[in-house]
Image (tube, rainbow, N blue to C red):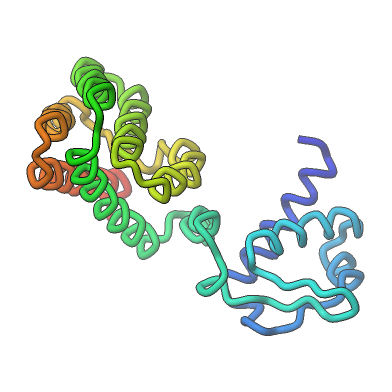
Length: 230
């Protein structure tokens, strides 16, 4: 990353934190670009790059000939806001993390049920292969990669493009913070659930697939909270 890009990223994060923390309220006018640049001690070009990122996230509105206004992130923000909310205070936000894990659990169990109804033979075989690989690995980092691959295969088998795109949107977040979000701690204890889920999908048993992934997601939530001491 170039020096200019580093400065722009710093400005972006500072402004984003201010918006998410409510220091700039929804509908409020931001200072002029010249004033912001002076306050932050950066060039106009670095500031504009940061503002463009905020605009692309839906967090500010920029109109030519008018002031920049803050938008309500709850109404206009997307999945790319989640990572910043999780770590907005410099550490993991327990409330946001609980929401993420709850949503993850709901998604995993419904993905499994849909996959049981819709998976083709190649997808069933791939899920069995991934589950077997998980059962054979003692390494947590490798297990996390297999966990992602397993869930991604479930999404493909579920044949719902929205779930596929959601996973695409959170892939970077998952791996960037894998050390903190230890969903596969003690992988040998979790391995039987991946195997059972793969079997349930292969047999077309939607209820068993849903229940197994629900159990897996709950145990993974417990591991994350245990690692964080929450």
